[in-house]
Image (cartoon, rainbow, N blue to C red; front, top):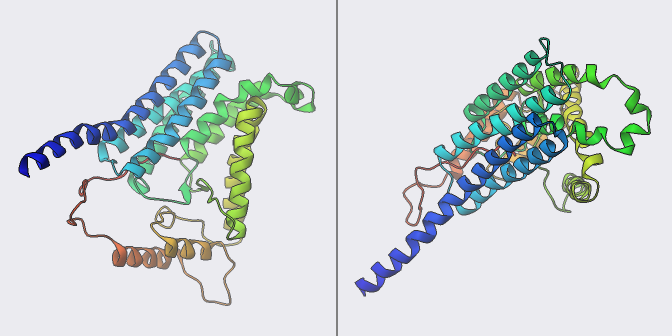
Length: 320
C-alpha cells in the first residue's frame, strides 16, 4: 500500500512541476516577441515589429489565465510578468515609434523615454494596488493597451481605410508625439478602464460584453491591420471620456480597491457606483471599499485546508 502511494506521488510531481512552469513559459514567450519587435524595428521593419508586439500581447493574456486556472500563481510570476510587460509594451512600442516616426537627429527620443518611464510607473503601481485579484476596472490605462496602440499604427497607415480617406491628410507624424505623451499620462492617471467584458446573455451588460468579444475576434482574424489601431484608440478614448464625464457629474470613478472582484456580491457593489444616486443615499468611495472588504473577510477561504497545494502563493498579475 505504501509503495503504491509513494509511486503515485512520484508520478504526480513531474506533472505538477510542468504545470507550474507553464505560465512562466508563456511569460518568457511574451518577452521573446517583445525583444524580437525591438530588433525588427531597428532593422527598419515596423510592420513585422507590430506583429510581434501583438503576439506578445496574446501570450500576456494567456499566462495569467493559465496560472489562475491551474492555481500555480506566485509572487515570482507576478514580478516576472511586470518586468516582461515593460519590455513588450513599453520599450518595444517606443522603439517602433522612434525608428519609424520620430526624428532621430534631435530630441524626439525624449518622447520614447517618457512613454517607457510611464509604463514602468504604471506597472509598479499595478503591482501595489491591483495585482493578483480579479477585477472589472483598471486604475489607469493598462500598458498592453497603450503599447498596442502605438505598435499597430504603422499597420493602419498602410491600409486603404487610412490612405483613401481624409485620415491620411492629418499630420500624424506630428500628432503621434502628442499621442505618445497622452498615452503615457493616461497610464499613470486615475482614469478607470474596463477589463475584459463579461460574456453571457443574462443581463444587458453581458450581452454588450458578448458583442464586444465577438466583434474583437472577427476583427483580429479577418481585418487585423484595419482593426487594431482604431479599436485600441477607441478603448483609450472611452476610458478617458467616461472618467471625465463621471468627474463632471461629481460621481466617483472606480478606485483600485473597488475594482477588485472576488464574487458576485462585489460586482453588485461596483455596479451601484455606475448608477445615479437615489435621493441622498449613496456609498462614498471609502464606504464602498469597506463593504467590499467586509464581504471578502466573511468569504475568505482558510489557507490550511487539506488539499491546498499553494497556501502561501498568490495569483499572477497580468494587466489583462
